Length: 422
RNA sequence: GCGGCCGUGGCGAAGUGGUUAACGCACCGGAUUGUGGCUCCGGCACGCGUGGGUUCAAUCCCCACCGGUCGCCCCA
Image (cartoon, rainbow, N blue to C red):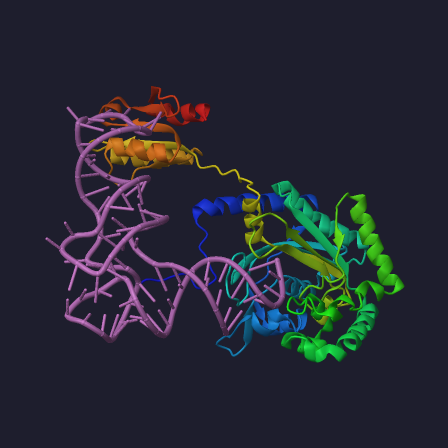
């Protein structure tokens, strides 16, 4: 009987986990500079959180959730995205009552979506994301976008495209929605099946449809930008001004809609334009969601955030041939052989580790030559050679692998001697 | 949910309807009783995703299933 990881999941092996840690550290460092604090929410939530938060008509809720019933008959769902849980936690823990507003949070967490896996799409995926709750200031929109772009920039990505749009406030959205319904209804029979149902449920997303992309009615469809009321228009202008002030380049795409129901005003996506990236180009996406906190039972509180795919970030780095520095070295490797030497080798290993030195030794019963080979393979800086004669003299031979030179060090001074060399 | 391609040792990869399934890398041992990176020699798949069928005979042909991969929808 042999087992495999479930479809759409992978094991993160040491070779790659080092890269992940490097990326995580850079990201967390940036969050610290932007003065965001970490939040960790449960892996699963009551299904209702996502139905209400993300929206019943979305693909995520309709066909991508890992939903199950627990022994108490409760319907629970492995989180498919990060915003709804964070907002739930914000409300439940009354973070809105903290005098320090806005509340600036970030998370680094696994998400789950029941989808057919392919390049850059997994059933368990990892996202870094941020949420800012409690401010309707357009400078916050710009700050959040700046943070995302900073992550990519500091990791060295060049072929990026920032796309922004405004979905407007409630009034603007409704007017636009009406206009869309009126525009597309005469062509209803010519649209794909998905779009026919979208026409009633969420006409905005027809604009996003790839199947009907070339339909003539698509080109003449009313643009949201023409339906923004003064306030929404003004807000969007401010966001653009702030981006320009920070020298952040962007393009405006009136068709950028985003898949989740909770967005309004600013919506944005960051895509990779690198060659050989596969069919998927979206690295991160986000936007403003001023009604979500209320929707989840909290006081009217504006919010904005984004989710960034970590797997896709790593893919983009690879596509642009950006190497992640990985430290594979080992400080010391103990080569021991002869009668009764093993116990002393174990003791020395322990003592050096207690002194803060990184040490490993052979556990495979290899001959001395094999142990040296292993030390070489592990890129050990020093090999500590312990045989019967050394043991008798209470010394150990310290060999510097790079130069091949070897000196005798009394066991009593081993730790200090190595610390000096390191 | 739908479609294309694929499934041989730890990895990469050849192969044929029929006695012992190439080769390369890695690993282990020896040449070198206690010293790595080079070289040489030796070892390393009762097995070719699983099940069924065709056949005197199948890793190779057919079918089904499972798995992987890439793409569609949608997204991270």
